[in-house]
Length: 104
Image 1: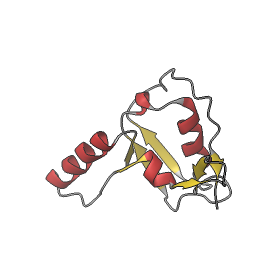
Image 2 (image 1 turned 90 degrees about the vertical axis):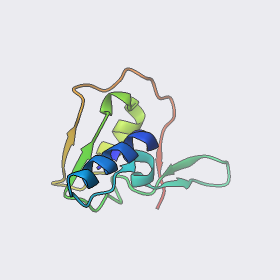
Image 3 (image 1 turned 60 degrees about the vertical axis):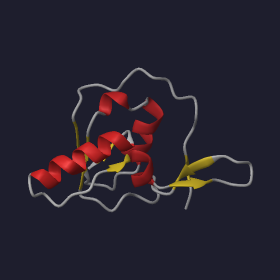
């Protein structure tokens, strides 16, 4: 379970706990593993196409709040055969001019 913000991740975790589902949601950034990508101050994600997330299924809440760059990074980090589901029908039109690098 993932969400674009900490507040949303907490709400999802609380809802899961109330329904006796032992899942703890994370922010998308923490799920992907933000890491420094060199000495120039840039950053990237530890999980990416060459180092995919270890999940069989990814559920994302409030996906309309996710910018295109972050959504692309999340989708690229899925392992082959990993399913995904989001709670919104479209990605918000926020522009992301930042290229997210893979850091292994």
